Image (cartoon, rainbow, N blue to C red):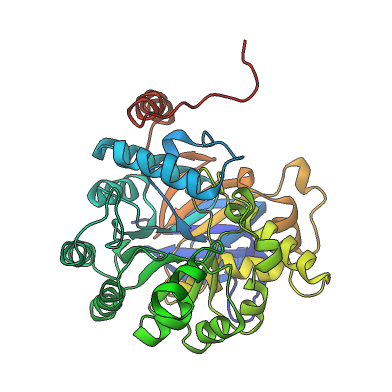
Length: 455
């Protein structure tokens, strides 16, 4: 593999948060081999291929810590936004999942991951609602990005994908064996969570994740319903009960955790359990994050926090910078204090702190020698970036979004060049997606029609 030098303003996100105004990164054999001034690296390696330039900003690839890759993508932004969240999930999303074939799962995941990497997301933590994990893993490989894959897991109650505890554990075992920890695509133990898992399923899933050297992730408390449900069944709130079962810990990533009491927050911090925060979803679904969310407190107390985009009928857009800006804005406004959180903290959550929360900071999350060459070239030569700010972090977060992404590298391989995938045909994917949407809505028995008349 030929050496490559990436040049521009570097936001390294290293321990000192070093910024190189005219820097360069030498990429060799998939990893970052050297970081120095642009002129120094070009002089030392004159035959290397060069990408980037003085008008570009280079960042680590972003981490999306919670993303549903199947089910919603092929009916993106079709589910009405004026219905209760449980109706959106159980009367729309779940029937759509049931109607999905393996081809649908792969097409859906391919579209989602292509959008994500086109917006600078190089690592995606899949949320576990996948019926055909081998097809989703194939999508990761086709798009050329890093991430995790899981499969459906719940054993309490009725409904699609609910199953016997032993069968679910067997499927989770297969996932972690098929895609071992440390690969570009890793198998994670994934449960639906909420109050849809038995104590045994929670406990043995956590044990499986630890023994396999991987992680466990599940949904908990995005709305107010999980708390009373757990109290009725166990006499304790969800996080209290999971702590007593030994489910919490550094290997566990909980999605959401919006409605927590003080003791639950303490337990997450004490056990170093990570949280994936998806603020667009809570706003879209009206789940009360602006009134009840404790994520700023969690962050300020050194909680292991990452950001997620969630699903295409909740967060809708898979754009990390959009999520980061909302996170910063909500934190400032909920505290009535602009000093508590800002662009720099949000970018940490999208990079190094997000990587740490998902257990991958040894490989990704910062531009440092020895780490994987997962990086993004943002074009700061466009009108909305003129003149250049004296603080590129402020400009990137508050004026940026995925449209500024020019080139993306994952594990040293360019997968986005000049804002386009060099591996897949967009037109073919769009055609297939439009056919799939019509069929899936019909098979799921859903009448998707716009509120306003169309002539």
